Amino acid sequence: MAFILGSGSPRRLELLGQLGIVPDDVRPPDIDESPCKSELPRQYCVRISREKVAAVAAANEDVVLCADTTVALGRRILGKPADEAEAREFLTMLSGRRHRVITAVAIRKGDRVWERDVVSTVRVKTLSSDDIGGYLATGDWKGKAGGYAIQGPAGALIPWISGSFTGIVGLPLAETAGLLQAAGMKVWA
Image (tube, rainbow, N blue to C red; front, side):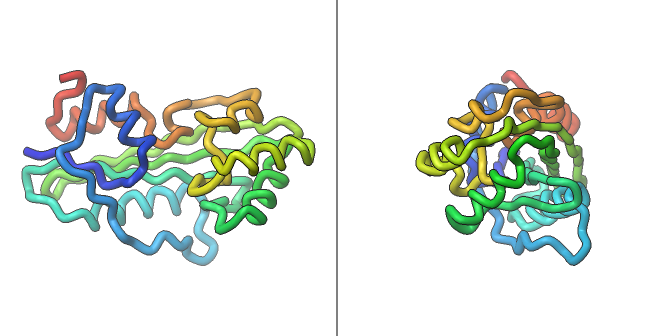
């Protein structure tokens, strides 16, 4: 049995390392991650993690883990900003407000799939133009859902969360450990 991480995220690799798990292979799937018309953020996130895990080539005895993290402001999905202008727009929208961060995890072994999604709430402080400009100058917004990563410099912009910190980072460890054990993997091995 091999363990395959279906993600190119260095954060997910680091989080798995906290459980003492090192993948035998890393195979990020290439799927269309566009939201469907009128798709709600939680449904979108669960669908994408399912599609990712189905797209990873693996032997029947292999365990494949995929996840998706989505930032939701109301019914709006804030994906990875295309450029600095869109990152600025996202941060301006999030300023002084609470939003949800949803991470869906899907694990496949043969024909069986185990899934779990975790929803956390994050509050961003009221941001000045200096806060936004300073954060954007770090470049940390690139490739991050919602235009920020709580574990980086943006942590200084977030005074409060409710939920799973590791879920906000990109892989809820408590839930992921349970799913891996259900799929027959040893955690802490």
